[in-house]
Length: 258
Ligand code: BT5
Image (tube, rainbow, N blue to C red; front, top):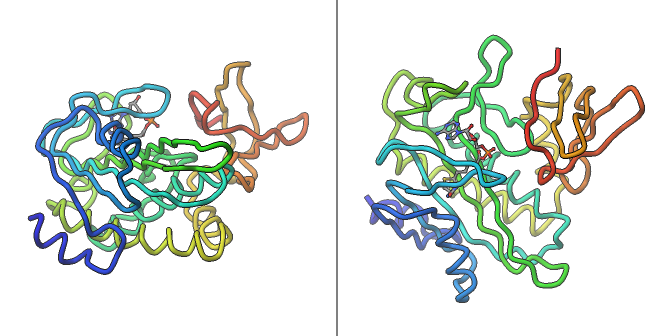
């Protein structure tokens, strides 16, 4: 119900929501729009993506109408170093929305997965993908896409849907509104006061910190205790040879290590 959504988002920077039945990828569409000069706050929602993307050109799968698939375009006027925190803001905002709208508690698996915990194991509910357009060392634009399973999840993966967790259907528009309102709040706080509050909330919601992990990167695995998140969003892993910082862009997989 686009009209209701726009009404409920009035007063936030995300009031201009565009809907499409089908597209390749909402992130790709908003990146193209950003290059044509689209303003801060543009939102695109699709019922279906034919080529939905994850990180490192992985696929994001969702049958038509089964998920919240939404991207926002922001022009945050912050340094490149802070880009990670826009993705963190989206993950936190979506986590808050899942809680308020569906009563489902989620945690954030570094860097960009929203998970529920089952028998101490992360089960993926949603993913966040941030793409940046740079202007020197500034961020000219960031497109942040979220895919959140509502009724379907890939049966062959450790995954779940909001309906499965809530035990009832969850309204996509209600989730979208709650997500965009929460994101608007985090975005404002990030711009006004820096990453401090966001980082504290992200750390509090982390499914990764305090666990033993194995980060697969190009040069081989980094194994140790996930000890912290650095100022630019890197994961600090305490290994037997000292602390090693790994960047989201370099980590192919992050897995629990016994
Ligand atoms: C992500 O990547 O989790 C980010 C997903 C972002 C999707 C949104 S949808 C709107 C916007 N437009 C786009 O084109 N993308 C964004 P990553 O961490 O790389 O995880 C990808 C992996 O998650 C895949 O390789 C699968 O293993 C798994 N996966 C794919 N579809 C899934 C689903 N529906 N539920 C759970 N896991 C899934």
